Amino acid sequence: GFGRPLLLSALHMLVAALACHRGARRPMPGGTRCRVLLLSLTFGTSMACGNVGLRAVPLDLAQLVTTTTPLFTLALSALLLGRRHHPLQLAAMGPLCLGAACSLAGEFR
Image 1 (cartoon, rainbow, N blue to C red):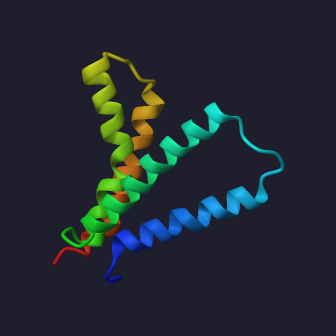
Image 2 (spheres, rainbow, N blue to C red):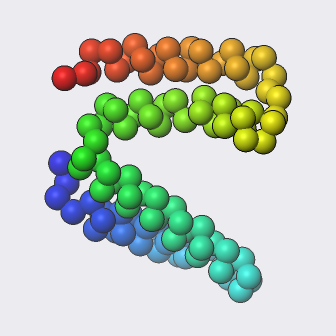
């Protein structure tokens, strides 16, 4: 229900950066600083897009997609990369996705 999701994401990243800068014991090397900056920008952009997306997608549906991400990651790595996964990894996806489905069952409008 927050009216400015991009502002919220930017403030979150700014506060995190200030907290990390103040809490650092010694300065970071230049190469590491550049990598951390790129990772922060990527994460901040991802958060901002997620917050903006919640204006168009109901929260319960977004949570379902987030919860089933590991299942799709396993499936895509098997299909695209040809990786074979341990049967226990696949078995663990059942309760995970079933739990998401049960919690979402009463939420559909």
